[in-house]
Length: 383
Image 1 (cartoon, rainbow, N blue to C red):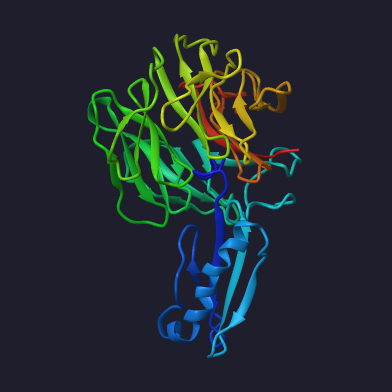
Image 2: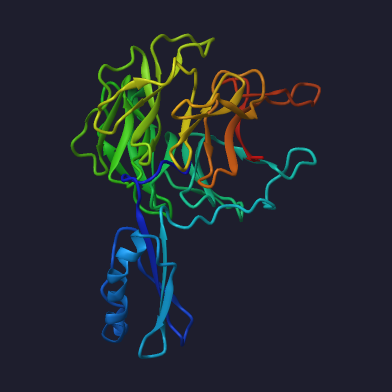
């Protein structure tokens, strides 16, 4: 899910765009969480008072009364203000999307995206980041363009920052130990997030406001500020075998994660869904012990999607209704990593496609993680 919601129950979002009447150039003056007091460059003097009016409109914005407005600058250019309460406007994929990927049979609702694992939607729902052959890629869904954002190595399980500018991911180094790195999605240098530790660091994810990162440190969840400072354990006590981050919802005020008390490679029986508050309090097994391999919050924070034995399920967080089946997984399987688009209309998940047999036929599809085939990504339009 394009993942978790902001760090407070409601986040005010305003987009301010300066439009140059001579060239048609659009310049974003404000993004989530920041106000600018003037227009860029030479327009500062003529438009400063106009953009300053955005601040005075904030009260109306929070109250949900300001739908948006546009006003002219002295030179004929314009400042357009678009206000909403909640998240930034999602671009997403239209219900009748025709994407540049092969489809499954005659269906236009199921797209085969190619090799990859541990997929994650961008915050606006137009791209997916994932791991493949030890590297991290970003896939633009409209064009089909696939861009590598990590250096060669053994990198895996990326997660998109809430502003859509960076990904955080795990990377194995010498001795089999792993560490956490971040990289800009549009190119640039990669930065180490935490130093490699004997316990190993992997499966990271961002807080909804981008201020913190949660990841698996050894067999326990840890949390730190986005620059790696103030690293500390999150869960107490930790699971006996391992824990990995699922998703963070500001609306619910909780982090959902998966914990294994007893490990059995042939069974999902011991992978259970837990939740905890970001300050480490109220750590609790969800329900009576929901079995799951991966978990994502719904956009409104009222429900959880989770990967169950044979299907993707959705359950009300308050447990007022029974879980409902969203999508059947291929059979058989032992682990399915997935993500839900921010508008909850698309599902992307990993599936194992076995290599061709001697007779030229392709083997069956499964989500079982073995050495018999390659992991591929499948994009599905949800009903």
